[in-house]
Length: 257
Image (tube, rainbow, N blue to C red; front, side, top):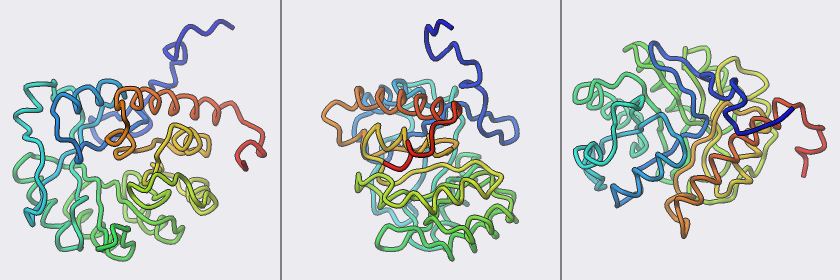
């Protein structure tokens, strides 16, 4: 069989998640909260092949961000599926308030739900509580949790569209420090699992995909790279390589090292 490019594999372009009329095809999600340059955001989103645009507000006004109007001038934002995030929230109440603002101001109905403590680590209990309230208000949710099977099952039962599981502390670059509980969740739930947090290299992304993750999310690794565009391309190719390796059925020993 002659392989010309990743486009030869039609299943790579099949959606891994559908929410209403929205189809998620790119298995690499990209955060844009740390950037100071509109042009770099444009180039990173293009290089990674991202089809999701993640936006937020900070209800406590503690952080600055790029203006959406400036981004829209540099990039056709209409081609993306817009989802909101509560990544600045440090309590359930803040997350709920952020969600309300995102819906009222932007009409967003899909939420990357984050409830993190002051240590920037997901608070699983508050996340489950927030998820129940937001699901009752018809939000579609992608919650971020520490790898705990009981929490994952509770969020699946609550009707979340997908799960985001922390590989290691956010922005740490440590990769997947303990794959076993993440693998347990991937194998147990019937909704897509996104691996994120601390994915600092293409190797980390490829491993997550080889484990059977539906997608990965990266941010800091791109922002802090000396050449973000090259890192963006590396992450994109690692995503494809890891997915193909998973689908090919690698030897179990290959995932141990």
